Image (cartoon, rainbow, N blue to C red; front, side):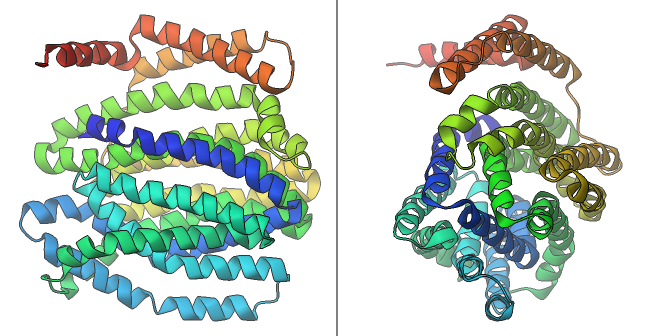
Length: 480
């Protein structure tokens, strides 16, 4: 199931990666730095609302679908989840009223209102995607993601060009989610209409999902607190610079982690439900090895090419600052990705999600304290130092607490081989002179990929070469 997802979600993540870069190129040019800051703050507000109110229900859909559908209770499960969603929608008018009443600049107010309104279609599309992903419907889950990604970018770019400011990307996101909702609605109605709402089932979902949602709120606080504090201590233009560099690094790594997580999360649940702890250990080791092999060199590579990448991808008003931000966020993005998409699986698989909440409280609190101390003294640099330190603490806390619930294996040999190959890659890349622009970027990226690929292929890191050769033999053995 894991490798089917890896292959099936690959086109989606290629699209996400290209659109993520195009988003930075487009919106950092169409929007002024302060407008880009409005977008960053509006997106943060939208994400906090979604996570605080709806995510626990989405987490229950993902975690319990396989077991319930295998036992013939899938429709009851779906009916309970969707009717809970309808009840939760009553929060949106309150959030909209708060957005209208709280004093903000006109541009920021419009961005926040657009974010609040987009939550309704976004949460429905997310439920539909989680159900498809859990049952192994790669094509269905991928379709929702493609519509959302391409639609949000295209519509948002048009609206930004028409002068909607920082609200434009958020309006585009909401309109694309409406299209996803319309596309997914008929099948979701079929899955849930013959089931009934069951209060004990909803209570079980809340008990499992609420700590997940609270932990994600802490994760959002961890990733967004610095923006609000930068706005408070400095200005919205600094937020725009920070968000541009943050997006350049974090979105690139997120594409890899989300790709592997989309395939890996459901596969680990299925392995545990159907094969027990031994099958789970095998599947987890396989996933962790691939995650390290792809994401460690990607993070280091981003840090090494930060300057030419920012010159090409970020608008001229933000490029220099973004180049300063990118290396630090590349490191923190790697730490965050390994924590969220691998080590946090121990808590959801064991259903001990209260420990997940504790694991996230450590870095979130550290981030708040460090930002309050460092930003007034060191400005943007202080926010960067606080981010890396906080995510490092979060990784350590998750490994330690995860071992108390369901210890996931650390593939030490692939880890050591990957770190060694990455170190050699970095030594080669830093020898290439700073030519600037495309020439520097292509030379450094090409040399790094060639060196890292040659070393890991020779060492057969994570048995990826062996697996690839087996796959090729199987393909050749198929009848024409």
